[in-house]
Every structure is written in structure tokens, then in C-alpha cells.
Image (tube, rainbow, N blue to C red; front, side):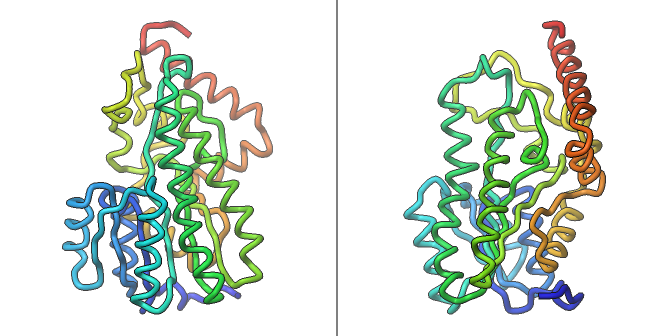
Length: 284
């Protein structure tokens, strides 16, 4: 379908947003309601989801959801589709970050980020995609990252999961096209959200050191981008049915450089890692 500026509105469409209690999920929920959509804001932190839904008024509702629970995800998605008669949009946005030198990470760190960042997305797809195939319409948007398109040392588990989300999204997109279902991967650079200042999950084993994520990502891709701008640009790209939604513009430049000049990107990465290790006091 050709792009039409009028498609930037989402009047009457229903959306589910996971990880909607803060950050990118909150901003996307807000932008959707502003463009005429109805939104179910979900989050593991039900209180945060409820606060966001209250901010958005009668066009939003909240639910507590752990995306690691496949049965719960399926029940929620099927419930929305049954209640509204269809399912228009699913934003698989819930995610966490895990960082540190790989030799200092435990299997528990890898398991946790895979369970949320990969299996959580799979659970959303498995619940929503068959419904969208039957109704011959719908759009699944999976939040990946620029870290899913380029190497990000010191955040290796995070980069691994985001590469997986990109691969899932781009591959399913081609399979889904014949059924009228759209699939996109959102691949932002550093965005101004609380995730930039979060440590690894508190209930996992402590690691000896984790990079200053905010400063480190800024050295790789520039100053964090405003989250509200990200959300609006994301919805424009969803309306245009873009496969990879790479935001902001400088992130697209980095992505293209990585494809055409991988050696340059590798040198920048090595320099950034050396700087972080020097700041740690461990040398380069």
C-alpha cells in the first residue's frame, strides 16, 4: 500500500503496548492516544501502567503483564481482540539492559535478558500473529535497538538480544506480507529514558563493573534523543510501513557506515571500550 499522509492518524485503532509504564512505551502510548487510537498500557509494574493510563484518559486502560509468561500474554492479547473485534497494533516494547565485561556475567544474567528481550517478544508474536493472519490485517512493532544493527561491546547480552529481535522482525515481515500483516523493528540509538541510568537487575549477582551506560552510548551514537520525538517519528514510520525504524537521523548514518565501512565502526568501538576501561582504572 502506498504511503498516504492521512495514515499518520490511528483513529479507531486498538493497540497493546508492553513495557508501557515508562520510557519508550509510555511515550508511544501517549503518541498513539494523541493520534486517535485506543491503547492498553501493560507493564510488569502495574502501578506504573495505571499511572500512564490515567494520564491518557478514557482512550487508555492498564494491565499488569509479565511478558515472560506466555500464557498470560496470550490471554491478554486474545482478550483485547475478542473485546474489540480485532487487533490492530502490538508494540512488543518491554525490555531490560544487562552490561559489564562478559567474563564477569553469570548465566543468570544471560537467562534474564533472553527471557524478557527475546522470549517476551516471541510470546507477543505467538499470541498476536495468528489473530492478525485470520483477520488479514494488523501491525506488529518490535522494539530492538541500534545495538541490533551494530556491535556494542560491554553491553554484549543486550546487543545479542536486539540482533535477535531484528532478525525475527525482518524475516517474519516477508512471511507475513501475503496475509496483509505488517512487521517492523524499532531500532533507536540512545534515547532519553530511565534505562540509561539503570543498573543491572538488582536480584541478579553483582558484577565487578558496568560501564557508564549514558556516557558510553553517547560516545558511540551521540547525545540521547528526546523520547517524545522518538515516539512521534516511530508512528510516522509505522504508518509508512517501514521495515526498520532507525531513529534519529544520525543513527541511520551510523548504521549505513557500519555496512559500508565496518573497519571504521570497529575502531570507534575499540576506542570507546578503551576509554571506559581507563575510567574504570583497569587500563585498556
